[in-house]
Length: 80
Image 1 (cartoon, rainbow, N blue to C red):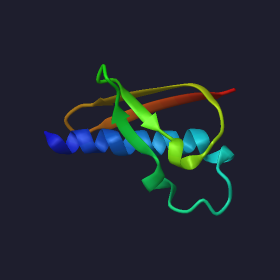
Image 2 (cartoon, rainbow, N blue to C red):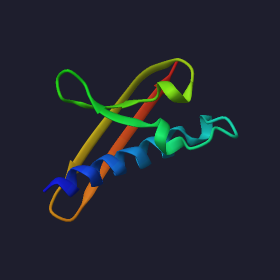
Image 3 (spheres, rainbow, N blue to C red):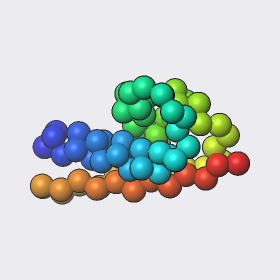
């Protein structure tokens, strides 16, 4: 069902926010609209954080999963 897809995307935004919250400048505004969850060319989920200007990102990994009533996301990021 389609709502499971949306639930996983929302869980991804929450996981990204928790991982980067200590690096966010004060007064950044609506962070939720600046975090974009997309798919790359191989359909792997990725987080587009360009609008947050966090500096040099060395790598990041995002994993999404969902079943009938649950969605979960895991995000890790390494800065240069």
